[in-house]
Image 1 (cartoon, rainbow, N blue to C red):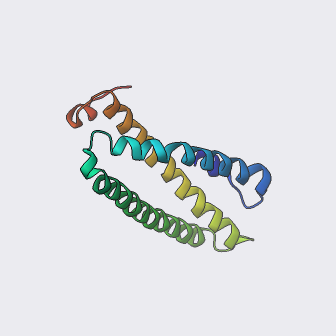
Image 2 (tube, rainbow, N blue to C red; image 1 turned 180 degrees about the horizontal axis):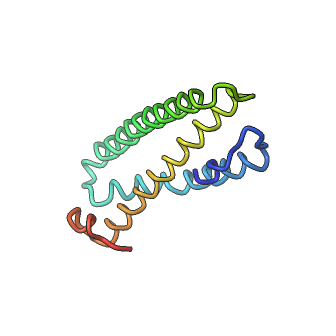
Image 3 (tube, rainbow, N blue to C red; image 1 turned 135 degrees about the vertical axis):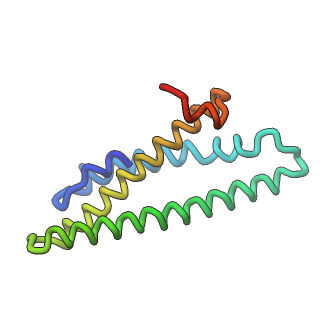
Length: 135
């Protein structure tokens, strides 16, 4: 997502969009199988189907909520950009790119928070420790 924060209205697909899509595709491909495996680790064989269904459902709900949140952030950023740059040439393109880069920055923050929590959980840190944990 960080690679997408550098987009401008004049960005080219080959140099500014494609590298981010390649990293995103490779990363997602490497994440999903281990995530499902870890989520169902330690579940009894008779309950593996239920656990897998719960992970799948959680993934779908999380994706829907994330998309809704980031779409709202995008729309808010576009609206505020348009309101403050009324007489700008190419306003629609500039406002759309501003909205996208704002949503991508929020995505970077969300992923960083998720990494922080995952590292803390991987080290056996409790929820109470997470608030006072120092890198």
